[in-house]
Image (cartoon, rainbow, N blue to C red; front, top):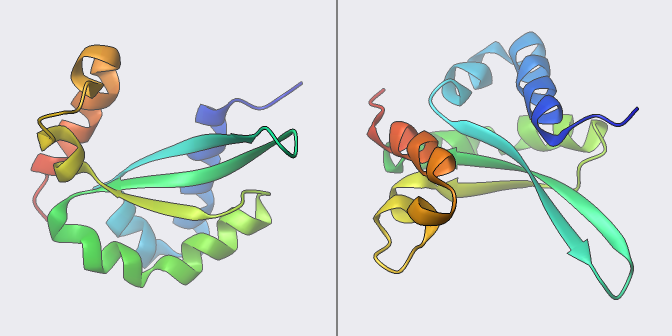
Length: 115
């Protein structure tokens, strides 16, 4: 039985909550998702943790990088990637709102959260 990407992201957040409570406080204002990358030449699928954050949390979330990376690697994930939700939802060329409205709403929520 394979674990879904959504379950894996939830498990990542749960482990952070258990072992690094201060880092978990920052994650409460973020959207965490497992991202998949397929390397055709190698025939491999690689999985990353994507942490979508607001402008205000950029420095704080990156200061927790070592904790996030440690947990991600222990879970078999390649790396932790940080994505600015404000930039993604305000990009005039983005088709995210039309192609994936649920993700766009999640990112809008993240971008408008104040800490």
